[in-house]
Structure formats: C-alpha cells, structure tokens
Image 1 (spheres, rainbow, N blue to C red):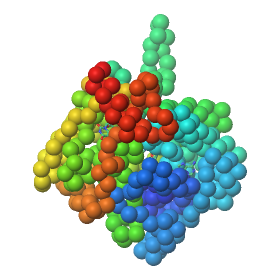
Image 2 (cartoon, rainbow, N blue to C red):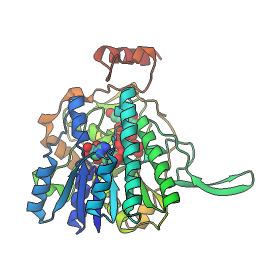
Image 3 (cartoon, helix red, strand yellow):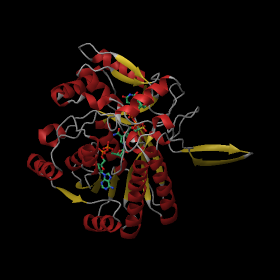
Image 4 (tube, rainbow, N blue to C red):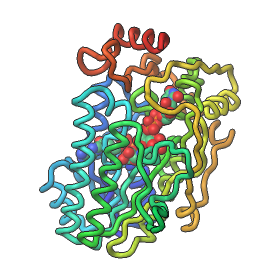
Length: 406
Ligand code: NAD
Ligand code: USQ
C-alpha cells in the first residue's frame, strides 16, 4: 500500500512510518515541526535525543534500503494538504498530526484556540482534500479514549444502542471530554463522521489510550532512528513520567487520590493497531471506531507498579490535582475490534517496565527535574489566573495554597 503518515516527525508518527516501511509499504511522512517548537516554548527537551527528520530519513535508507518521502508543511494550509495528497497518491492516510497535550490546551485562551484551530482545521482541510483528490483513500485518524470521559456505565466502541420511549437506534456514544484538547478530537470525530455520510469517504477513528514506551523493533536498529520521549508536566504522559521520576529519585507525582483510571497501550501496539486498520479498510461511506488500548489501570496502580519494578528506592507523593477530573470512578471500556483483527498485545509487566526504566537510566543525565512540576491549572478562579501564558511561580504557589484550602 501507499501510506502517508501525517505527524511523521512525532513520538508515534516516526516509529509508525518505520514500521510500515519495513513491512513493505511505500511510506511518506508529513510534519510542520510544531512539536519541536513547543519544546522551545516550554523550555524542555525530549529525554532521548532525536535527529532532524531529514537525517532520520537518510539513516533509515542506509539501515533498511527503504525510502521514506518527507513533506514539510502545515495541515492548516489547505492548498499544501491537497498538493501533498495529489503528489503522493496514498491508499491510506494515517493522521497523527495534532497538538496532543491536554495541559498545553489548558494554559490559557490562546493555547486553547491554537489547539482547536490546529486540530479541527487541519482535519477539515484533509477531509476536503481526500474528497476532491480521491474519495477512496482510507483515513485512519488518531482520536483518543478521553473523548468518552468517565461515564458511570460501560464505554462502547464508538456507538451505543439506545431505547428511548419505545424506539431503538444505534447512536454515537455520548462524549464528555476533559480538556480543550480532548474536545478537539470530539469535534474531529463529528466532522469525519459527517464527511463519510455526505461524501462517501471511509474512515477509522482510533480512540487511543495513553501510550507508554520508547523503543520499537525499527528504532533500535540505529541510535539516530530514536523517537522522542517526553517526561515534562505538559507533554509527558503518566507512565513515561513516573519511570523518569523513579530513576532520578524524584517522588512519583500522583495527582489527587490517583483513582483516575485510563486505557493504556505499549508503543509497539500502536504500530500494530495502525497497520491492522490500514490492512482492513472500512466500506465506502463507513465511519468506524476502534477503542485502541489493551489494559486499563488507575494512576495509583501505575505508580505502585513502577515502585515495585524499580530496583532502587522510589516513593509516591500525592499532589493536589491541577486538573478537573473524577479521582474515583467506574471504568470499563470495550476494546475487542482490534483484537478481532488479530492484535496480539504487549501487556504491561515487570519486564516491559524494566526495559523502559533501562532506556530512561541510559539518558538520566539529560533529566531536568524542574520539568516535573505541574504548571497548568484547569481551574479559572481569580487566585489561579496567570498574568500571561503559563502560571509563573508566584501564581502557582497561590494555586497550590488555594487548592489546599479548598
Ligand atoms: P506528537 O506531538 O509527538 O506528534 C504529533 C506530530 O504532529 C508532531 O511531530 C507535530 O509537529 C505534528 N503536527 C502537529 N500539528 C501539525 C500541523 N498542523 N501540520 C503538520 N504537522 C503537525 O504526538 P504523539 O504522542 O506522537 O501523538 C500522535 C497522535 O496520537 C496525536 O493526534 C495524539 O492526539 C494521538 N494520541 C497520542 C497518545 C499518546 O499517549 N502519545 C495517546 C492517544 C492518542
Ligand atoms: N497524572 C498524574 N500525575 C502526573 C501526570 C498525570 O496523576 O504526573 C494523571 C492525570 O491527572 C490524568 C492521567 O494521569 O488523570 C493521565 O494523564 P496523561 O497526561 O498521561 O494523559 P492525558 O492528559 O489524558 O493525555 C495523553 C496524551 C493524549 C492522549 C491521551 C489518551 O497526551 O494525546 O489523547 O493521553 S486518553 O487519556 O485516553 O485520553
């Protein structure tokens, strides 16, 4: 197949491109390097050093003999999107290219607007380009399990059968997202579902859980093929962060009670799920949803697993939760569709954690402990409002004090 990977310079996009290329597909990657720019803005860096996209592509050619075409541009630029699809002529497009941090989207008004414009407009441009260039292209879109929130009933895969006043229908599952970022994914899902209905496009919405891990069978072939690994409070995801905290002797920062439960998956399973979706396209006009995670854990369970797996001493601290989220709730989400297509999951166990801790240990000298401290507050009360952008130290201390005082 010809597969175009949007966001191919990112944490998941780059290893997915390599995986698909090694599997024999003709692969192109698209990126505008926004993710590298957020690092400059936040004053943080990937724990694992990463090379420039062009260098990575050259290294992959030397290591594997396979060519990956790179297109540099922004999905919010409609003509660029259309030109790129006309030039590459994909059978499938894997769309990772969005601002993906919930805290980043909650910094202030301008970051919320940026996130929603970047994500929603980028996806809308893509839908128009597919419809106009070749409606048979299969759009594999990265959504998120966080679109559903944490309802007090079982979560289904995209749709739920509802009987109301004696009549029954299968309807989109209700969405209760927890940040302006997660909301952008809900808006995308609606736009994609609508485009499938009116233009006969076909799409798979992969509602992915939180990913952990850094190495994949392809990225380990050469150090210059490494993918990024974020551990800061804005872009670092929970288990990756906890592993870095354990290794450098920083307390593991559980927000609130730690009963927040989320679906999780190994980075290697992201690659497998995306390939399975590409190889098994939906029908013309079909909008389907797969819940892409393999296991669910509470934040407290994750912290305890890291403590148990780390050979040294590691401790857990409970911080006031900077987010507005349920800290103790029911959580059971269906996730059978990818298993039915043949996914064989890598489950989280002490051996997976040990490999991840070893990667972190290898780069421990690059850790900046200042990056662990949560700086973004979901609440907008007078005492926590920042003067501009991120909360400055004084405002953050006030926020912590205000939260302690309830
Ligand atoms: P990432 O930020 O590392 O990668 C996203 C890439 O997209 C970056 O390289 C960025 O520069 C690029 N990009 C962003 N906006 C763009 C635009 N307008 N034009 C062109 N390129 C643009 O993120 P990731 O962790 O690799 O996540 C990839 C996707 O998977 C995201 O859509 C995210 O929402 C979703 N997802 C991630 C996780 C996770 O745990 N990392 C979990 C669930 C879903
Ligand atoms: N958390 C802590 N301590 C920390 C960091 C996080 O307790 O130091 C908690 C958070 O409060 C939250 C949970 O861990 O309850 C998960 O936080 P996260 O930052 O790992 O994940 P999230 O903000 O949900 O976002 C990440 C990705 C996003 C993706 C989402 C999948 O950044 O792109 O969409 O995971 S999901 O959670 O299923 O929506």
